[in-house]
Length: 309
Length: 309
Image (cartoon, rainbow over all chains, first blue to last red):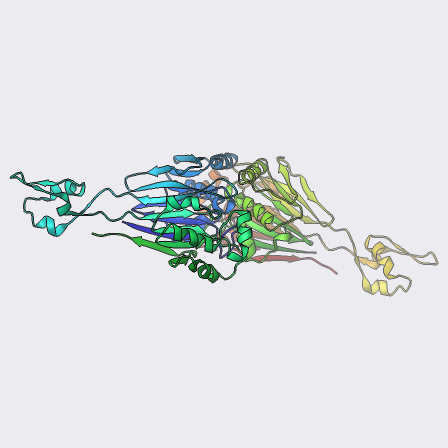
């Protein structure tokens, strides 16, 4: 049970040499996801030595360039590298049309299975699920249709209480899976040993919420309640709170208010406007509302481990 | 009369941290042109401190990603920077449709005048002309419709032979422009002083030919004959001559053969396949055919000056 989040880019608007637009690579419960794909993301993936073959699912929050313009290049590169495995893109309506038009006009045929999953609901919905992880949308309020994404580990098994199990000579290794699945153990004489006395509660599922771009919006709080890690955009400082409202972005303090109200474990700030050369005030302003807050920085890795076994 | 060419990217296919796809910034006779615009070009322009406002004309050779995927980001950034001046894009059919679809879907309205000039002729044609420079296409043979571009200074004036002019007390400063325009000088007594005795031949116009991407194709030789500077793609070394033919690219030796037959001043190689870690063999192989050859490298600047005054 673990999460590892690598920040590939955390700035807003235009890419610069040392300020890449939004993209994150998430490893959660042995599954890998790319979140947003601003221009230059493929070069950032190489820089931070993330294997392209790990990426099978890409989530695009919205179609503004600083979250999306790197996608066509990445899709093309996968093709040049003779990718064979499936690639699934979860993105708003329009992404498929843009990508397919570009591929057609450049006569670049994609030889691997490429699937688009069009997002259009304005309500939170489950969009991906396997036996390890589920992903639901977080409807955000921005200038165009935008979703955040909530990633949740799925807990399928209890943990063995090895000390208790070893005290029962009748329990064999082949019984372990039944115990993990929650079943009681029945001895040859018919006595029942309760599952609870042989196993431990499973670890709490780790959760990560990605929220960019959005105006301050308390409607998201029930969806992101108690997540371990929240990335919430903070394009501006409080000196630009009116501009934030006008452009449908948030300030660092507003992001921290959301974190506080949602009682999250840790808040990561990002999507900084290029007007700010010094990012420390983002931390200072956010800390007035919520203490466990950090700045995203290119290449920074955030880890969460949660294992009671 | 001068040319300054800055290489922003000179590698083929996929962008990597230290290998950017094709883009060049050309300054010729006080005019500025961006040639091709692979992903990451806007960050490269910033890195090499080229002012965005200088760019008023962009030439796109073809719609493969490594020459084109950076254009939408650059166009959007110009808008974010509140550009007001005209921008002219010379590109194959389809570029306008792609760019406009992306702008529409991201609800990004461009407030400056943006003009697309669709290239579709298979013959060399004049596509840009002002009083300083003219640009003609060089039809190339690649997997999709592709043009190179020939940039030529326009010479409008002869140079004053200052020593000869100062010997004629009747000639005043207000007469200089007539002399530069080729007119003879008529003295008060009716004597004629020939223009040739008062002026010098104008400097030879500087010429630059950009040829990427293309198979080996001698048809371009008459168009690029005697240019001062030729950039010719060299995706492969001679060990991959069959692959070059198949993918409609050229080898370093083939580029040099073209340079030799066209009697150009200097050849610049580029568009290297990522399979080659060491680029020196490109130079070695090319030199067997043409001596004045150099490698393009990111950030490298090539200058040509031509002034007999």
